[in-house]
Length: 145
Image (cartoon, rainbow, N blue to C red):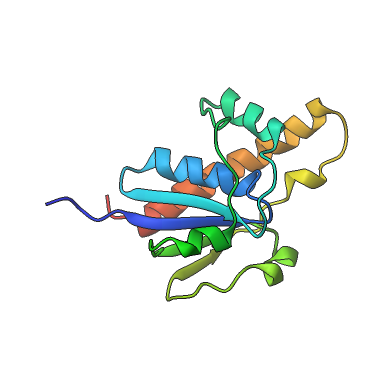
């Protein structure tokens, strides 16, 4: 009998960076997780995040951005909803229409980074690595190995 996977939804503002990174790491670092990501609105995948993830060994270039509303229309229920937006943005996060454990990670939004691409890539690398650490901590705390 197959073990049931833990369903996780990662949410940020536009599903263009932070939630995409979290989804990728959750799915790649544990075979017991089925992670999806979405935004309050569907934005455009951040090309510098795509580049940063590629340098870490993950090709997310074909990922599509999705809205939370579209994800909740599916029949899949999530065990956890991880909000990767900054605390100041959390007030805009959607109401989950059923019982799910909510986790808040205050991660800086790459869309507000200033400077040239090289400077932005350095800042994106920091948040990418921070998300990876948080994902590993999450797996260690919540997912039975």
